[in-house]
Amino acid sequence: MVAEAGDMSDLGSRPARVEDVHELALAMPHVSVTHGPSENPVYQVGGKSFIFFRTPRPDAVDPEAGERYEDVIVFWVSSEAEKQALVQDPALPFFTTPHFNGHLSVLVRASRLGELTRQELAEQVQDAWLSRASARRAKAWLSTHLTDSADADDAT
Image 1 (cartoon, rainbow, N blue to C red):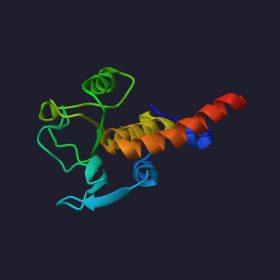
Image 2: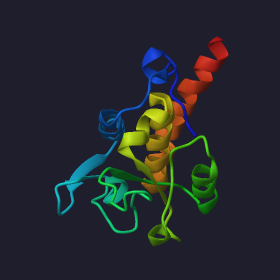
Image 3: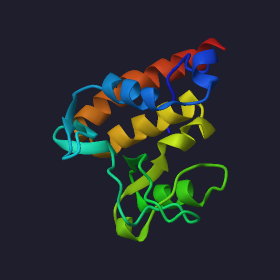
């Protein structure tokens, strides 16, 4: 995961919110927002989705009530290994469903975003963007942000 220099301020350590997903996704370069059939936001880079707010589906339901989750957000990941690491870590709110077998993405309920810090959410948004951006765009973004992080590390 890539971290921005200086993001571990109080802002970075507070619980994440849905508004942060929108803000962080829009802060990435070359991002456009389209809307699904229910006007749900879909964040794209170069015409490729990297985060989208999913409409309720029969594969993501409350196990006790049997009702469809209405607040699922999908984040792309770079590999199956990353996906498995996220969904198998009991400390993280990410999950998947059989519908997403073979799809490089993880799901999280908006109601559970507060289990992540804003900084952790920022890293997921950045990783999702990097997994879908062109190699040229990803390289350019990484060269700027890894340099900033290295400079911050050198200053400490």
